[in-house]
Image 1 (cartoon, helix red, strand yellow):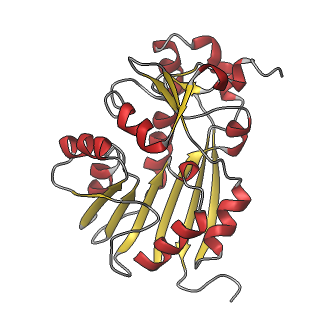
Image 2 (cartoon, rainbow, N blue to C red; image 1 turned 90 degrees about the vertical axis):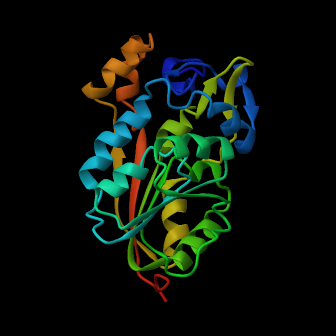
Length: 255
């Protein structure tokens, strides 16, 4: 398929569409990108986020009495969901103050922390469950974040990671949006499934399952709403999201 074909266009304009090719948008750093995107992040229906929610609601565990961390929580989409699963305490952490302001408006009862995923400001064994949604492709050093999670999670704790599928990434899909200045693509570092699993298995985690998620009929209305209905069929043929389920064994795999 040619470079400019529909399936190779980037996820752009508030992730509404597969809209602009990478050479037609401004590429910005992660801090700048989310500072600008925070203004409109929750305002437009997003097929990726809709697919993620549809699937995760089926596999999120019972969190009764547990301490949960939403790592790179953004505007707090999952904070209340985690609490509704019975969590005793929920913490949201993000590198973007602008995104956390959105989370504060949405979930004022939660503890929100401005910090880097590579230097978690928590004591050892603080969490029983961690969710990390659409963040690892912004992290170059997966080993470092895996080390930090191994330190701050209790043995037996569950880790759920969601990210754009490597096949979609290879076809040019990227996180991006459009604001009053320009169309924007946020800097990413795509990771293969093998590299994700290897990084976490080297740091006390065992991979229980990997899920490949495809768009389906529930997402069709979002494509139609954003004027991209003609892209829906092609988008459904590409795995859109990969979900990793890990458990912290407390011991490096193979040791």
